[in-house]
Length: 162
Image (cartoon, rainbow, N blue to C red; front, side):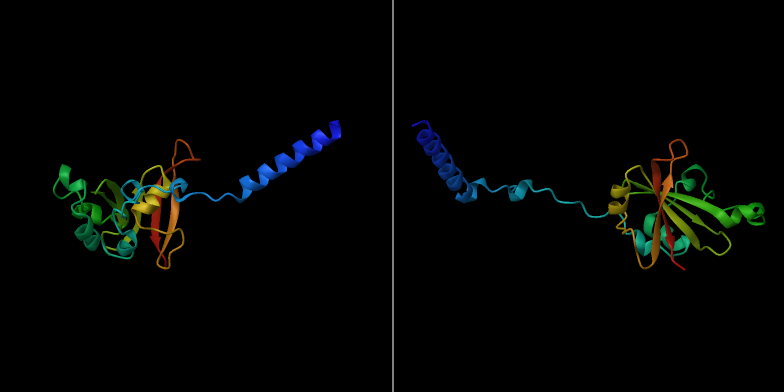
C-alpha cells in the first residue's frame, strides 16, 4: 500500500511538472519595456575619427576655441621665442566640447596634430562619446594610465595610423 501511494505521488508530480514545462507564456508576461521607457543610447558627443589626421586649425574649427585662449588670447600658440625651441614641437590645446574634454598635442611648426586625448575614467564611456572602436582603420586607441593609480585610466589617447 505504501508503495502504491509513493508511485501515485510520483506520478502526480511528474504530470504536474510536464504541464508546467509545456505551458506557454502569455504575451502580457513577456519581458519588454514599453516603447517610451526603453533605454536609448545617446548619440556620440563628437566624432574623433573625423579629427584624426587633421591639422590644429581644422581641429579648432570643429571643437571651438581652446581653453588656453581664455587666460590669454595668444596662449593657444607658442611665442616667437618658444617657436625657436623644442617646446614648439609638442604644443597642446585643451578643448571643452559638449561636456567632453579633449587635449590635442601638435607641432606648432607643421601644425600637424600628433594625438588627441579624451579625458575621463570610464573607457567604455569615452569610446562611445568619441564614436571610437578599439580597432580602427585610420587610428589607434591607447589607454592613458593614471599616474597615481596605474591600474586606472585618466583618459584614452587616439593616434593616426601612419
